[in-house]
Length: 309
Image 1 (cartoon, rainbow, N blue to C red):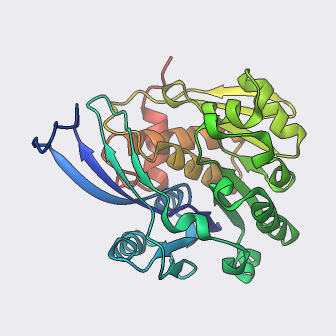
Image 2: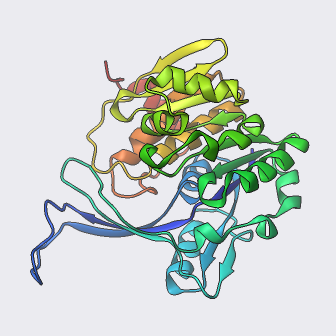
């Protein structure tokens, strides 16, 4: 699997545990502060690399120290960052995440250079040489730009997948409709399905994406697992029972596991089980890069751990 992950690159600063922000100039002690690569492109790249894929990542970051650190974290994880462009006049995207004791993660986010990525930045030849393109956060670069990129990939027989970034309440169908005919696997969460489809029922919303051209919709539902929707029907895949420390990056980990499974010729259900296992492994620690696991270890986890009932 030779994959290009394109789109959102973020440096996460995670603080745990945070029950409340001190008033005024007050202070409180915490157990851990970490900085990790994250985002619907960079975060997915991290887990894909762990699962044995050959990963190149593409997007826009700044020339600031934040960008330097983000690249170093990705390169240390075995990811080729040569396709990342750097802006001299825009900051690298970053998020501060005060993680609550139960794993919830409110965020303070800087959009940064992600929204500046455009057609002039796209490594067209590298896309044509890949076996897979994963486009994360197409709504940030616009539906027409995203459709052009995905269409180019399909013209060269590249398997395509898309994950969304915006919360469902900010989504509309016209933000993604033009790119759906070029998407083999759409990987939203349940909130995004309802928001971007502008429907009130999850399956109805997913089928609206299929009718517009998407090949398969794999919906993540947090602790309730995943829902697979195809033209043939629907299927649920439960999440695994684990002690959750932090849910940051779990959606990206699911995407990576699902795509890796499909690249190995597994059924959609088997691929979703691998995705759920990867998400569960990431959820047990702080940040998108948590967990020192590979494909055999993720498969063993899936075989030996209990799924939620």
